[in-house]
Image 1 (cartoon, rainbow, N blue to C red):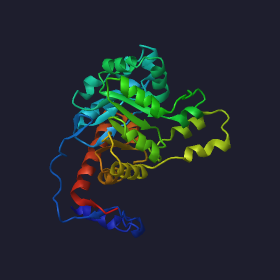
Image 2: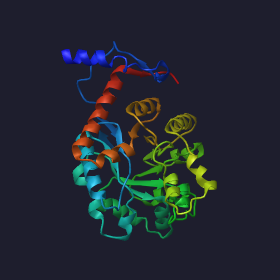
Image 3: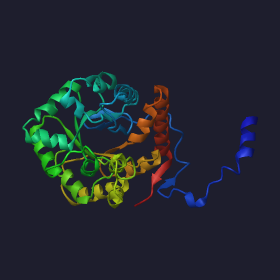
Image 4: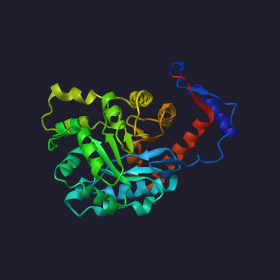
Length: 330
């Protein structure tokens, strides 16, 4: 105790916080709860039971480290009851060399949501050729619950080896839904979606929408950086997009104004802290979980104990927020 008191004396002045930095999203209620002594209650999402509201967003596939990364992510998903989306499985459509990079259902367990991932350009090609059964076969062989379709027209346009998207993605998604036997999630890759795109998707029978909102990893910027001769006239395309906060408000408005089939969202893109995710989760009018891809990737590159400790801290912070914070009226 004496050491602690010495720390308090030495650190007191350094620990002051500028009153201008107060987080006005919440009312702090310190009198109304004890410290949490149990985990969150399990809840239903995507037809499975999750234990914590964190989604391991799609990140990597077909690379040398993919098997190691995916195995660690699947293990932590199992231990903490999380959902998980694989990185792009495109390589599996062309070769049998990388199946072991993605086959981690036995690690994550059958009780938690687990989805494969393909780009809209690949899906468009398969729909045009009448080969949607290849997507179903992919899910069967990986034992995934369905497919995440990532929508990335800007990324493809700026990618030196990018594919051309020939049809509006909403039309391709509609055709896929008519033919596939598996649930479909639709996500963006770092710039989010506007009102009309969200409205069109919410009217379809997609299992969920993942935001991939502006503020996190931006794949348009990434592809611009990869170009040998980037042109300054096009660099501002990376600054276009919609934040996760804006998208939650748009989804709330759409679900109030019109009948929708999609009833769940994965809030991802620019979620820098547990309080960011907690706030957006609480103001969403439909069920949601929180995706923080960069954080999971960062810790999955370390040993498993670092990844486990990170998720453990996330879960503890979420419980503290549940017990002591109330969202202010918006």
